[in-house]
Length: 249
Image (cartoon, rainbow, N blue to C red; front, side, top):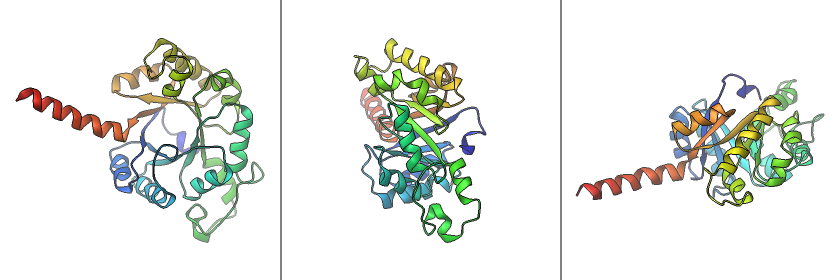
């Protein structure tokens, strides 16, 4: 969590492309973090490890989205030496406690320990290793269902949660306006959730698609600002170029 205490807000993006090169380009641009997507992305763990290297060498945080609350998935993600994880489909305090059990070393949890991997500094660990890792490992949860919205108070109150990311696209489906993330119902859900999350001293996050949206989100209490997805941003740039060029001919 200590990595999140230096700034009032952080900016980053989602990474779907299985490439350390593209992750490094993003990290070198000045982003504070990248989220390596193991739910929708097609990367394997070797690629993920290299993406973590490519991100962190630019003083950018590497956070891995783990697709389920499953011990081996959480363990493998953290064994890469990533700064933290963000977990999908978190709906209750019990879900948070399960995540902590797998992500934290004893006595806070039961995370498996191997000192001969990157997260273990390849065998060169100090006496305070477990305490330091438990303190610095970021745990984020994704709020993306009506149940999660209803339980946001208890989820955000957990001492194990650092970030609550509000997934507007899934929330839009749950609220009956699929895909319409600008809908007032979605905006209200983001605003109300951010207020609760901030009350408990945690970072509230959501996706934005412009500086204007980012500034507006900040005013509602969003401090973990995710600027789109790298695939969408690349596609948009080239589509706009092709369209504008054709219009000029």
